[in-house]
Image 1 (cartoon, rainbow, N blue to C red):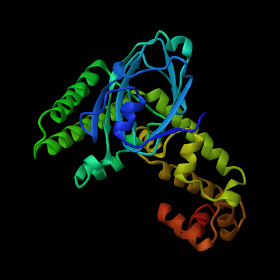
Image 2: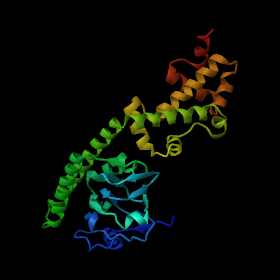
Image 3: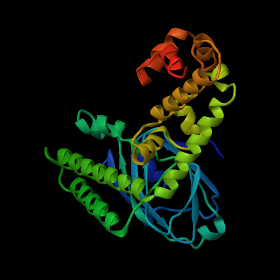
Image 4: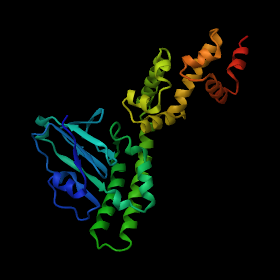
Length: 306
């Protein structure tokens, strides 16, 4: 994969994709059918200094996005935060016949400056899903979002006045709220895939806790676990909350307590030895952690089995 192209401004993006200059320097709605596509390009990778939200449909073409390959015959929605890398691999034989449709909303962080949405955008979990999990939309959902995009486009193309920014900001916030609703719907409707993620997490943690990893590497972090599963931390937690009501950290802690109980009830190891095998530097830290989760000290729990 070539070094990603860094695109600093929305104007640069328009130039990069063979489009006329933007009508507003900090916000733009682009029609995918108007983008120039080089049929000889097999790989394309870039990073943006601004946000992008898009729905894309490409017939006769499969595009690899992040860790997964997607079929774009149906509407697929992606979210990118500034600094994320977007990479696609295209089959040039199908690209020659491909038809592109959809839209992309580009929002420079400066447009959000001094508004409540600036902080909200940074905290939207689905901007972290982009390299791993796209949002698949029904036709009705897609039309709902398209209406909002048309309102944004109409507003910035009109005469700019003191109300323009606030109106556009409110439309972006509505777009994000609907996106959150549709992501939650996707979590719920994709039960089989979600349970496979849970099974993979259980297998990963069981393997980790049954070897020497705790002693040598310590307790796994949410970021490490998510990376091993090829998921973003936010998306993994979102799935687990839907399936089990618990986040990733809680699952890690539950597995740790399960292993601690096993050692306390089936071995003669001292509390200090168990603490060491579970990755704790001090037995006091282990005892405090164990009691916070079980309401019993390690010794009290051990005595209950005798």
